[in-house]
Length: 90
Image (cartoon, helix red, strand yellow):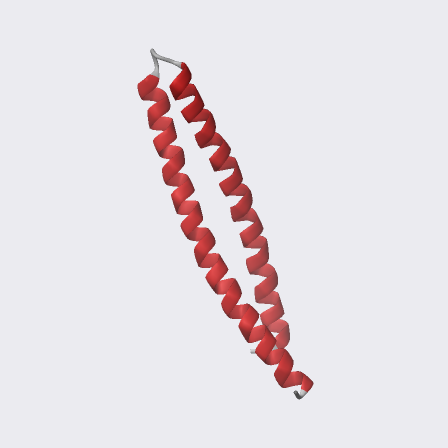
């Protein structure tokens, strides 16, 4: 691939990484709120326990997605550096 293509991949994957990081942040807050409510209430424990479990599962999936994107980003960063050295002649 050319250096331009690798730069484009880096840009796209960095945008995806930013989106996933925002999603992880919001899911972490959602899970913390559910756990806090779980400890505060005695009558609706089942409801908040279920919400907490759902938030934890979504967070786990988002973290897996983040690791996948980081792997792809690293691969294209290495390819970009290789192409840069190749085109500069050193």
